[in-house]
Length: 341
Image 1 (cartoon, rainbow, N blue to C red):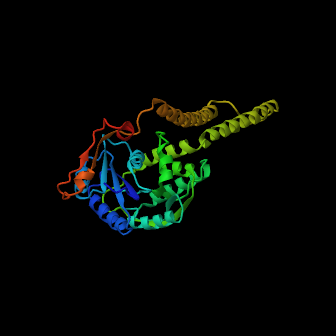
Image 2: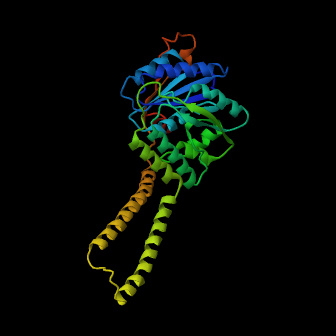
Image 3: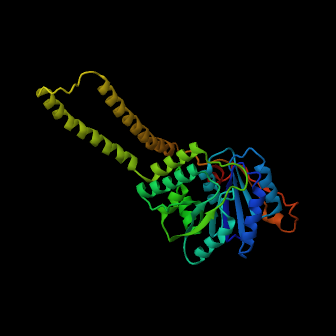
């Protein structure tokens, strides 16, 4: 593209074949209405349905669409990171491809950005089409994160947000592996505000965040921004020590007084040992999560590997029809940051 975009939209995609055309249609309508140059950066996170073919067709039809094609599935947060690495706009919007976050809300985000805010996050006032369990666990998660983390992460917010170029540059400099984008964005600072919206049902397909991934995501968020779980272990050990200190003289006095209370038998001892052991194993697990994060950082593996990037070359986009202007493929052996991280 010859004109540098003012607005970049980053959309990670994982098996969203039925949604891609509608996603592009609605995003293009919203972005065209701004009158500003824009680009759509779609990240193919190892999709195995027809998503790649759909995105390739968009590249051939519209030079403002670029596709970063992963070598395999690296996860949603790494896909968002890749999109931010490739985005060139002054304002960068992150949006999921499932259309639960309405593209029309982008206009509200842009309005706040033009007022001088550098991070504008979208706050969910209502979540339609989700089970009571998903709503309850999401509400619990956001409030727990807000209470125990070391940064002020707004409740009921996802990754749907707009960031100024200065914020994106700062975020791109942070290459930690167990990523929690909304937490990193809050940690960076700058002028931030929110806009409320109603989250819609999925346009098509199924959620890509089952319970297992939700738990993993929550662990990354908690261990990435809080030492509270380790502090709980200290408090629990102090509690058990206090119980033991109080129990020793009480038991001794009862035995010396000839009380009828019986302490013989192993059942009580075994129950107490099992209880204490379960607490020990739980806190070993918590400690292991922090050690695993250290291990991930020490290995210094790239956050993602790009197989190729599809985009129209500027000379192709000028003087050629959209059909003739084929998407350019950039091999992964190119720039180390773009191709591997």
